[in-house]
Image (cartoon, rainbow, N blue to C red):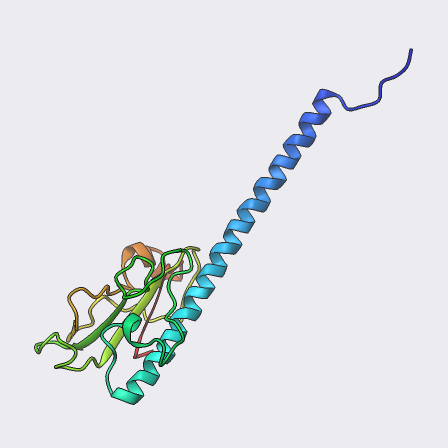
Length: 182
C-alpha cells in the first residue's frame, strides 16, 4: 500500500485560519495608515491656505470672504479640499471644502466689502484619533466678531464631536483649526 502525500483537512483549516488572521491584521493597519496620511495632508493643506491668507492680507489688509473663489490662482494654484472626497470644491459650498469663515467686528455690517474681515477661522475634522496640540481650538465665533457671510461654514474647534471629553486631559482632539492669531 502506497502512502498518500498531502495535507489533512485539519492542517488546511489551520493554515487558512492563520492566513485570514494575518490578512485582517494587515488590512486594519493599512486602513489606519491611510487615515493618518489623509490627516497629515489635511494639516498641510490648512497650513498652506493659512500662508496664502497671510499673503492676501499683506496685499489687501483684509481677509477674503471666500477662499475658494479668491485665492486661486493668484495665491495658490488651486485651493485644496478634503482628501477623503472625490467632489472638487469650487466655491466653498460643497461638502468637500474645508470650513472657512471670514470674521469682522460685531455690531457693524456683515458685508466684508463694507467692513473688512480682520480675522479668519479655518479648520478640518480628522479621521484618526491623534492628539493635536498645535491648533487654535477656537470656538465657532470668537467674542466680539461676526461672520461676514451668513452662509459661511465656520468651524467650531472646541465642539464636543471634535475634541471629545478627554481632549482637555491631553486626549485625542479630532479637530484641526487655525485663526490669524496662531
